[in-house]
Each structure stands twice: as structure tokens, then as C-alpha cells.
Length: 242
Ligand code: GLP
Image (tube, rainbow, N blue to C red; front, side, top):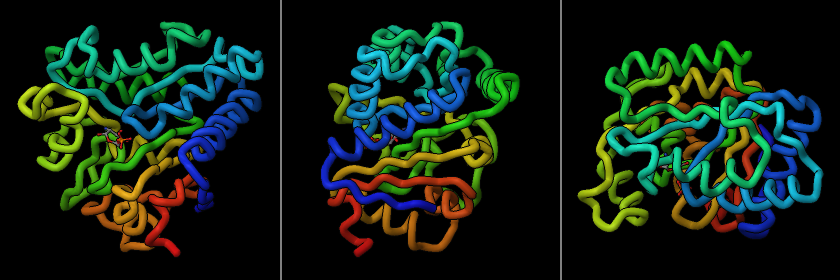
């Protein structure tokens, strides 16, 4: 596991964007796994700049997102479908047919999960998976549990996650209580992982993920077992590591 401590949010974002760009330069038809939340916003902005400066071309790239809320339509501004289109896809030349986000309003969620796994396999698997981390140690929406969920699955969101994510909604009651998330095996099968963490609220989760016991109560701790994982930690999120 490579650990890079960044001096600030901008440095974290720029380094992350540089790694994503390298992946696309090395393999123009690569499969990227992407994350939502506040953490990767700066990375997306930087990648858009790189695209505008013709430093990266997404025309052959496929993108799979980690997770999506159940019950929110794709037009809902809180859906991750909306987030990805508004913060990234509409500014770059990725083909719509090459972007994949679980459909949280599918009639048969289990079938949707199986199909999502199949689509990832059909594209040859994920080359580079970007991850954020929840303050409770979640990755994607894999919440702390007594076992690791392997593949894409339906999740009951933790009370703490609902509370934390309520900042994006007008009230806590509007936050969906369930979601679809790639599983731990799906994430671990990516050929490279890039985890980003920013701010003091992530310090405890980062400490446990990096130095703690590998256990499903801290889902992010599993990345200690990944053969090619890089973590870029902004200095406040790294404060317990020193
Ligand atoms: C959310 C998402 C995760 C994200 C994490 C951290 O609930 N499901 O994919 O990485 O929580 O979010 P943020 O970057 O806003 O702190």
C-alpha cells in the first residue's frame, strides 16, 4: 500500500487526477471505477481541466460507479447519476453508453445487482477504482458489518451515514435508507485502488483502515490486502498516522 500525504485538498485532488490521467494515457480504453461525495469533486474539476487542455481523452474509457441510492430517480439532483453527469460526464468526451451507475429504482434490485456485476465483467473488469471513505470506515456503501459482502448488493444504510449525508438534502427524512453498492470483492478485484481522504472527520477511519485490524467492522481496512493500492490523504485526515 502506497501512502501519499498531501498538504491540502488541492494537492490531494491534483495528484489523484494525475494518477487517473496516467491510467487513461497508458490504456485509452481502460475501465475506471468512480466515487461520489465531496472528496472527489476537486479531482473531477482537475480532470476536466486536463481534458480541456487536451492532456487526456476519455473517448474510449468506460466508467462504473461504486454505488447509488435506492428510490431516487435519475433526474433527482441527489442521485449519484445526477452527480456524475453534472460534475463530470457532461464536461468530457466519455460516451454515454460507456457510463454505468446502478439503477436504484430498478423493479428487481437483485437482478440489477447481478447485471451490474456482469457488465463489469463484460468490459474486462475495473482497471482503476477511485474510493472515498465514510467517517465510519465505509467504502462505496459497504457499511460496517459482521461480514464482508462480496458482490454488488442492496444495502441498508447506517444511521450515521444517513445523518452525515443529510447535509446534501433539505432534511434527514429525505435521505434514502437503502442503496445499491459494489461489494468488497468487486472493489478488491479492481487492478488498482486509489483511496482519497480529506479533513479531520476522516482521521479516525483512515487510522483504522491503514493501521488497524482487517475486519468487516471497518470495511476500508480490506484495502491493506490489495496488491496495488494507493491512498492519498490530505494532512488533516492523516493526523493520527504520525
Ligand atoms: C458516501 C458514498 C461514498 C463516499 C463516502 C464519503 O456515502 N457512498 O462512496 O466515498 O460516503 O463521502 P464524502 O466524500 O462526501 O465524505
